[in-house]
Length: 248
Image (tube, rainbow, N blue to C red):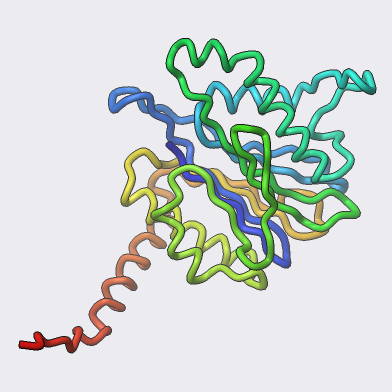
């Protein structure tokens, strides 16, 4: 399991992903799940992955190396896609291609074709966009009404996002809330863990303003965890007790 989130804001995009993978309690490893594709001054794109690691790695490798389009004869890669929508379509085709080539063999070994992706960024001449792609290769696009998307073990981190994230929020305030969301998830599910990879892409910069890995024991994240826990305890203490009494 994993936890990945993308937050689409007026000023740009924030994405983050944990790095824990496990194939049982005695087989826990660390793998990067947030992948950045960029051509500074022209485009910045990021993909976060959840689900079967071998499938997601195959898809990401195809997007980096490309493959020949039978209709045009051209090699298609994520970095040469004309628009973000067409890039999302390319990711969908890559997912379906991996399913065609590996799906039957995986099924024969009782391995579910389980994978999902977050894809976001900006190409020059377009607005920032954020998509979520499913195992079938289809996708949805993030909107201003709910300006974030999650994949993986998302239920523990969702409440704080629902209460605090708005489209007009500052990029680094959104990052702070996102990290609280990560902390909430890690406290409730051991299958999500550090390090945490993150990227901040400001609108019309066409590059990563921040690309960072939070390692265990990192001072800011440790302080954020302690402050959030203290704030929750203080809020709980400040709320009056329920006034309800038995009707008997």
